[in-house]
Image (cartoon, rainbow over all chains, first blue to last red; front, side):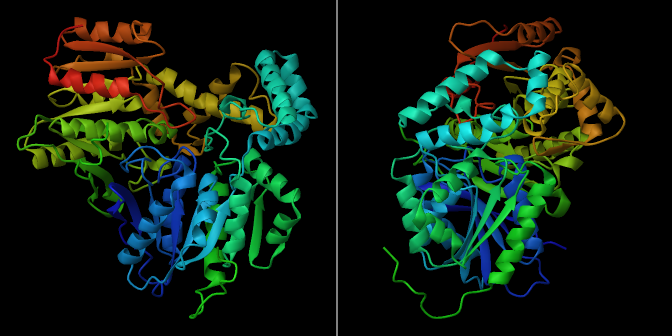
Length: 314
Length: 285
């Protein structure tokens, strides 16, 4: 039988964070690696359609302790709301608490979806205890990148679909709205810097969308790249096929030789769920992600003792 | 304004263990004897997640005013045990009774219910079966049937967008889904597996048909601007409950519909109005 989950409160700067620990199933060998689930987008530690809660339970059942938490200003944790670009202190406090809560735990894999994947990239190289990263649909949005990805992957694809034309014929398609959105995107993709209102993101009405409202600071791509280069552990990259955020990330990679090289390295394993949306909003997709995560955490194994190559550290 | 930093931390814990485990967050009241006690009932599915921040802000604000506040995750929701697919209306009612008992024991005073959206409808339903010192209703769902239809529309819309299917064309979309439910088929909607039994229980609930609660009721609605009247549906239900003998005070405040916004939104006017409402004697609407 699965041991009970534990509710934790711990300090971070002047605030208090709330976390849930899912201890590993008792039959499993003493776990040396745990998974810290970091929350991304407008979510809290349970996740969209409880993805993080269910993931933590699935990992625990496979013998991997998992902890998930709200950083400052999110969910039940106190303090003013903050951006994913400024959560290093929160991640460190969470790793500390996780280590203290699970005796024998020596290293932590950070699991992050959307902007939490980006936050994990920023943080990982600064903490030796972080031995691996699971990054899902990483957030690499800049204003012009969003507009280009939308045009390329959404509208062009839809114009080729018979169902769209059928919908138009039966009066179910909201022309005015779509045209306004389309025109705005064209402007943005040409002008580069203009703001893209969140409402132009397709499918916002249909599925829970977990994306930040505004494009992040202009040096986001450079910061992510520095984080990727500076961290030398294994990385599992999980991509949803039907997600603009993931497309923007892959577009960024495609456009840069350095990024392509980083992703081609043997320490990087890539998995794609072709039909999945941004938040993996079906049970089969969530289960697949949980299985890939557990397999990968098991395969990559605990890190050897001794210093890691640290030449790339900033 | 940053009184949050100075506030004592809320205490997260699980009420019981195993399948009975329910996540709770207890905000102890400031001062020695509590001014009141409130149990928070969250809304349905993704609305719960979006409104988590507002619930936490309000719970902390009430605790600072001397109220004991308990936030509860219902079965199959949030951090509580179980799967959403196994959640049932009557399990949720039992959860509420269990949490009320804990809160009353801990605080030493009778506890009222504070519910948001479907949580408010659930609170009104629990008020049918036991005496309560008060009800705080935030943007209550007044008709379960209409609420279910809106939730089913998410599936119709998602089919139209993702699969390029036309959602069984036009108005047939939600009707066909209702037929599936009636035939006993669970539906996966926006990542949540909705059991027919839960859907039917929600479908059957209408606030207008409830026996008016014997306790003071504070009814809050959010509008785009201040000075707006209560929505017609809410006004009708509030009037019906009032006519049946309930003391209903209605409040309309300006702010975003934070349970449904794409981003996490805060509504300070609602936080203030709620604190103010329960520090005053309740007046009839």
